[in-house]
Amino acid sequence: MVTGCTPGHGASTGEGTGRPTATETVAVGSSTQTITVGGQARTFHLYRPASLPLSGAVPLVVMLHGGYGSGTQAESSYGWDAEADSQHFMVAYPDGIDHAWDVGGGCCGTPGRTNVDDVAFITQLVAIVSHALPIDPTRVYATGISNGGMLAYRLACDTTVFAAIGPDSATLLGPCPAPAPVAVIHLHGTADHNIPYNGGQGDGTAKINGPAVPSLIATWREVDHCPAPTVETAGSVTTSVARCPAGHDVELVTIAGAGHQWPGGEPKPVLERLLHLDPPSTALNATDAIWRFFATHPKPAGG
Image (tube, rainbow, N blue to C red; front, side):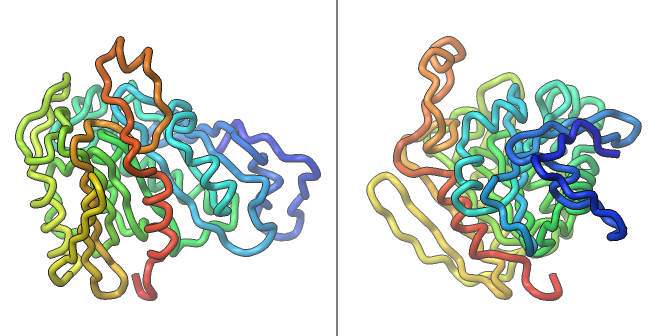
């Protein structure tokens, strides 16, 4: 069940089609939806650009907030609505229980302690949005920062829904024994103290202890049967790219000196000072970089 959707101006009825039309169920702009998963009400925010084509299937990006964040915070902080306006795709911003996600390994927060099935939530979200709108099933993507980026990895481990994932300042926790091939772009700063680039336990309340980022990316190159990557450096940004079979490419973007942040995100100096947060790097725009990768990596025929 989807609730909280407000029809846009000139909504059509969809009578006789057997399926609700997009204008009937999802307003142009931002709306909030509630669905029931495992007997629990879960919310997400959906952004539908006014520029979205009236016909034909469109991509969907699921943007996963970090620990202590929310869907509305992610929508206001990382620039995905503007990207969707210019590039014509849908964005969903889910809310974690108590501002966190269960990503495996006991992390994080209430969901990690109580085994909330966030994978089921996100997969059901995609299914419901795909029923309400003409979403292209070969162009469904997940991105996120920190705990949200970790959920993007969990989704890649446990589902075959996504054509590509784009974690930032994240790692993989918990078992991932037999993931299907998927395209990956990972962004990380070398001065990240919450999820250290070289692995080991990080600062912060979650005390996340993951593998070194280059080792994690090497693991996904093995999953995707990739050759050795090519590496280029421009200023403080080093990009490692492996072109892999069936388009399941793996890309690591390393930003020298950057901390635990979303590159190119909205600076919030007061909060950064009060909460000791790292300022967003200006070396690149993560939203632009991740979308460019997503746009060129649909799910190949046959998965």
